[in-house]
Structures are given as structure tokens and as C-alpha cells.
Image 1 (cartoon, helix red, strand yellow):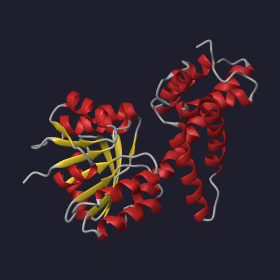
Image 2: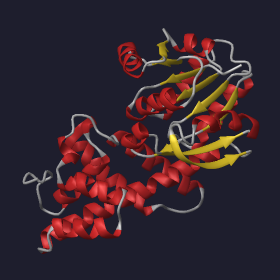
Image 3: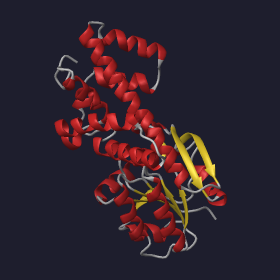
Image 4: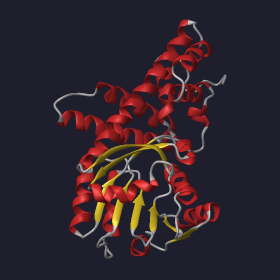
Length: 306
């Protein structure tokens, strides 16, 4: 019998992932969706079709065999797991796509398995546009037999590739995600410093962008374009919110400390992100590190000429 899938959490990433599960997941049964703001779930369901909206988390869990969720902060993940466990979960598969500390992953794994459920961690790499197009990179860890039941919804559905830790502790997946996100933080910081010095030295940011396009197509070019067009401060809703980026930096610093070292790029990036938060509040985006670097260097936070 085909499994019933349920999805909890409709942030920037979740909406695109739901769309692709419906479009490409070959579901025999409609996807069950729940979001804290029910109107958002209803709007998405109407848009993507072949889906229904649950009235509560326990309603969704009771109806679903495989429950996927993508939430922002570690406390929110644990809070929602506790709500999920208010109903019977025997034999149900829980798939956490959130970016959280590996210790949090271990804690939710313990809670779910003690209640009779099955658990895998599956954080994803990629921007919201990649979630929309089904080009995410999935990191999958947990019992091999459970992971195999989740893989049909990864490559060719929500993602283009899987980094496979099947058979290993689920926390291995979130450890990879936290370390991997420091590469994004490093990239944005490097671009911010490069464009700022290009402006101040007289080289010119357009000329530097041409170099970036030629040498580093892909995320480097995309973030460079966001900086030069002013997208980093013009957006109504951030693509990679400052609070989430700072959470990831904190986790990276903690993982490093526990491993007997420092991640200086996480420390530096978090300093810039603190300035972004002060300047823009919750609307701040990781790309606005460019504005923080400009400000530190005696330029306006906003490149108004863009």
C-alpha cells in the first residue's frame, strides 16, 4: 500500500518542497499539509493541488505514514516533536529537514524512537529558488531500512543529489549541514569584502562581478548579483533570514569548540550578521553582510546607486 505523506512547516523552503512532492512524487494519496497559520496551508494547497490541510499537528500525524517537517529554530523543532507525540506514532516515519544542532537531532531521535516511531534526519542545501525547481541537495542519515523508504522523494523530486549517511546516526546529517553552511557564510563574507574593496580602491564592482561570473558561476555569481542590485536590502522577505544565519553560526562555533578548535569564519560572519540585525531587524538577509562591510568601511549600508 502506498504511504500517506504529511508535511509540517511552510517557510521559504517548505513551500517549494511540497510543490515538488506533489508534482513529481507520484503520490497516490493527497499530501497532508499543516502550518501554524492555517490560511498559508490552505493557500498552498489550493495552488499545488493534490493535497489537503490538517486541522492540527496531531491530526496530520494520525493521518500520515511519513511525516516530513522543516522548521526554523531548535526549540521549535523540539516543541513540535512533542506535539506530534501526543498521538500514536508506532511505526510512523519522521523526517526532519530542519537545520539544527546535532545534539538537538539526537534529542528528537530519542523522543521519537522511544515512542515507537522511526526517524531520519534530512537537512537540505540550497536556496528557495532551488527548492522551487527541485534542485536541492539532501543529506540523509538514519537506519538504512528507514532511509530507503524516504529516498524515493529525494533525487528527482525535491532534490538533484543525496549525500547518503544511511546506517549512521541521524546527527551525522545535521553535522554536515552545519559545517556546510559555514561555506555559504564564508562565500558571502568574501564577496562582501571583495566588492567593498573594489569600490573603495577604484577597481569597480562591475569589473569584479565580471571576474566572478567567469571564474565562479553559480552561487558566487548569484550572491554577487544580489549585492550589486541592492536586493540584499530591498526585499520584503529575506531569502536567508539573519536570525537563522546567526543560529547556524552559533551552532558552528559550538561544534568547533566541542571539537577543540575555533571556526574563525563563523565568528567573523556572526559579527557582521549582528550588524545586519541591528540595521534591518528581522528583515535582514545573510547577503546584507555586504551592507555591514560597507558600513564598517565608511560607505553607506545601502548601495543606493543600484
